Length: 253
Image 1: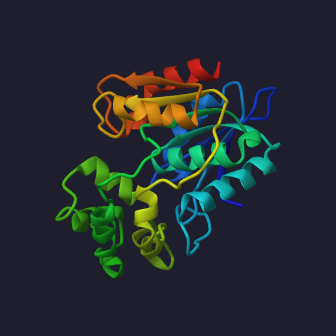
Image 2: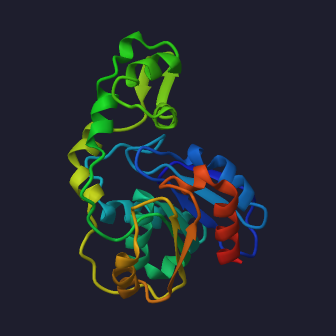
């Protein structure tokens, strides 16, 4: 089973599973998870090839959805699901292939479609870091500076840099993520629909989801509703945590 970080205790409400995006981890969602655990148990996962979860040769959405189903089975058999970016696509595939395991679903800033941009430059930047000379995260930041201009993005990547007795290592299976990037940027052709309640929450300043995507979303998720977090970009939960939390809690309640 995937590595999990659990917040709170079981209640009479469904647990909430949080599914991070590409290059992320359960730890990235610690503050959000603790806030949402006030009245239910929250289970944040490390996706395959991320964090402390197992490394695998495949990183497609059917496999990721299978991982999520296994976790839900370990926490009672049904859960509400919140997924961001890659995690949002995995949540959608889970809802379409195993709808009985999903109560309500929240998809943060992603649509069920093929994206033309690629995250390969960031994989290459991390692979280019000389881990043998790193003693602290600031050493990694200095190396990433030449290829990643944005300081918040470098800080995000460096959360997956482990420093222990064996030296520095990435807690990301960069080789597999590089090879599987076309699958990660795409979306599988899956029939059927998920008829449960679904909130598609987008960043107002993000271009990942637009109104042209709404018909395709409703075709798969007939009860989909749409809400935007004003001024937030793709990382809406980090850029605007308060309105993000308010939207999530309002929907779940």
